[in-house]
Length: 109
Image (cartoon, rainbow, N blue to C red):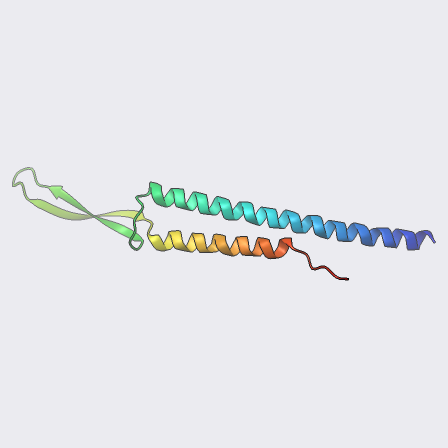
């Protein structure tokens, strides 16, 4: 008789653990999605808020002191573009969608 009682109590604790784990995973996914969106948007803004494509070289115009003419050179610098921002926000939406679907357990009657 004690073994049956132990088994039934273990089933209840197992379902409780699954519920707690679902909530923990869902909340963690929401936090990660929010942090990703905020941090990538802040980085994109701080790096210049480039609305074009990502660049790894930037054209720099230098003024020649002797002749007064403009000279163009290229500087190796990473400038994140709008596609980096869009990709990170899209992955944040995917994480939020996963968190919403995980959070609601299926009810059986």
